[in-house]
Amino acid sequence: MMKGRDGREKKHLFLSLCLAVLVLVVLVLYYGSFFGPQGQDANSALEFGGKIKRSIGWSNDGNEEVGKSEEPIISQEDGDYNLTPKSFPVCDDRHSELIPCLDRNLIYQTKLKLDLSLMEHYERHCPQPERCYNCLIPPPPGYKVPIKWPRSRDEVWQVNIPHTHLAHEKSDQNWMVVKGDKIVFPGGGTHFHYGADKYISHLANMLNFKNNILNNEGNIRTVFDVGCGVASFGGYLLSSDIIAMSLAPNDVHQNQIQFALERGIPAYLGVLGTKRLPYPSRSFEFAHCSRCRIDWLQRDGILLLELDRLLRPGGYFAYSSPEAYAQDEEDLRIWKEMSALVEQMCWKIAAKRNQTVIWVKPLTNDCYMKREPGTRPPLCRSDDDPDAVWGVPMEACITPYSEQNQRDGGSGLAPWPSRLITPPPRLADLGISKDMFEKDMEIWQQRVENYWSLFSAKIRPNTLRNLMDMNANMGSFAAALKDEPVWVMNVVPEDGPNTLKIIYDRGLIGTVHDWCEAFSTYPRTYDLLHAWTVFSDIQKKGCSAEDLLIEMDRILRPNGFVIVRDRRSVAEFIKKYLTAVHWESVAVVDAESNSDLEDREVILLIQKKMWLIDGSTKESA
Image 1 (spheres, rainbow, N blue to C red):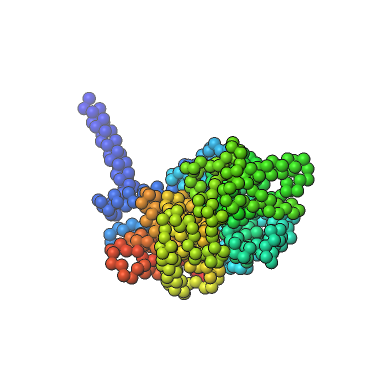
Image 2: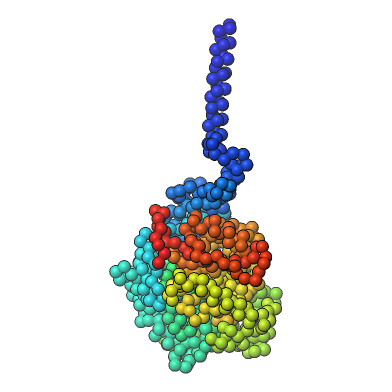
């Protein structure tokens, strides 16, 4: 009996020892090592590491690896274990052209129920934080510094956008041609095979504009090109002092906007679907659709009414399509119905020739007031804000003009280039005085001159082309660059004062956006990002500053620049992440020399390195 009890005790002792060893192994794995940081420091390291993993979205749906990293994510500085990321994971090279909020794979994986007939699948659908691909987007193998403007209008490196399907699919329309290691753009389009320049002169001739120049002595400055293709129409308008917002969806011709931006032509990814486009009312003097394959008659003409919202008083819509000269029964039906619709919208035919018709909007509300009661489409409700656009559904109604438009018999804007510095009438909508407007211009002129002097060793005359002002206010940053060979995408926060209408009234372009989400553009499309208080603003909203850094890296070209103008604590935060995103500091200076605030504004100038998928870097050119 005693012998059996001793055996059981030995067995229990053995099991206890095994359990103790197992617990010990778990502790070692959990805490890293008995010889590493102990107590509070060790717990902080674990907490911070978990926080980083959550914020940069390492996990996707549990079935696929999102990113990869060749080195540890955490490094230790000094003796205080001030933990900062050493590197972020690199996205799989399949995601080298990822647009997070326009990702069709996300729509498929999350099984979103979207109406394809309404183009909802081409509208913005952003991933939840736990599904974010927040890793660094690698450049394609062999990526080259883009060809400089103005040469880039006509040719780009094929390796930077290795897609030639458009060249074959549109070979009869002269969109683009592959020539050796380059893709060449002859200037053709779906309706203008023989060149955008000749087509633009043709439109001006139809309207009897002086010298066949479409800018009409500065009275046409902002143009909206919907279904723009590779944006040759917008590219050739630039020589006439006209700037176009070229718009196309990320559809079967998915790289058309990528080509446009690689060429240095203003462009944006978007679609006429169910939501208002992110531009204020009365933003454009001229709209253009060249066989853009849009059904303008659907849903009581709601898409044409959205275009109407965007056009200024007296604005034009050039429509180049077979329906303009009916050739068969279907064309005749469409033309008849479209003619009836625009007549009820008070549009008139300004000119019609060959397969192109140009309509013009009324200058005042008088025509709307003379319509019979019950005429459709109706006028929009009096409480409808025509400038509210972020996530706002379209409505099939006519946007009437303001009292100021009615009084002035038009928009009341000066011709270009005077309008850039002339206080526009809509300042009064925001309670901004003429003195405030002029002071803003003066301040930003000085600030931009200061930026360029700080960058003098890095920026040559043709270094920059595509610029973005991430918090543009009234557009004075862009206005200060009027003599430089650049264009600026002016971004206005969706939850702030709607100053975007002031920007458009000055003859500039831009969009509304929420920087808690990814921007609607391809990777590697901007040469310089100007971030004035952007980090402070999103932190107030509880959004991730790490995510914003990774998003800025996504849209910034290799060798591109970032200007951060923000609180000193923000600059110190960003400096800790420079190595992680392969950026390097160019300069850090006080923004205002006479400021004695502890957390005063500073300017942090940064350049993105040219790095490869294997983790190596090239020297900045």
